[in-house]
Image 1: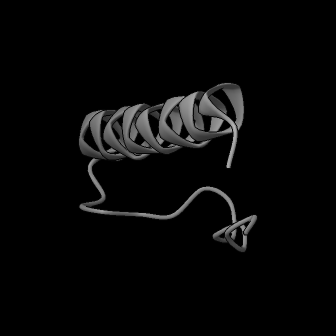
Image 2: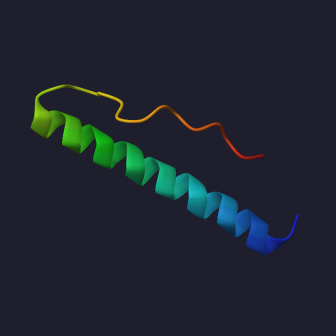
Image 3: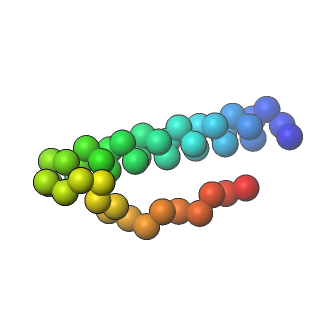
Length: 45
């Protein structure tokens, strides 16, 4: 496992968390709690 691949995996995970937080914020503004705007993407392993 190369460090850059590990870094990309961590970076992707952080981006996924940010995306979920943004979705929840958008959902709260729209008055729906925890509404999923897009289907969950499968994890790349």
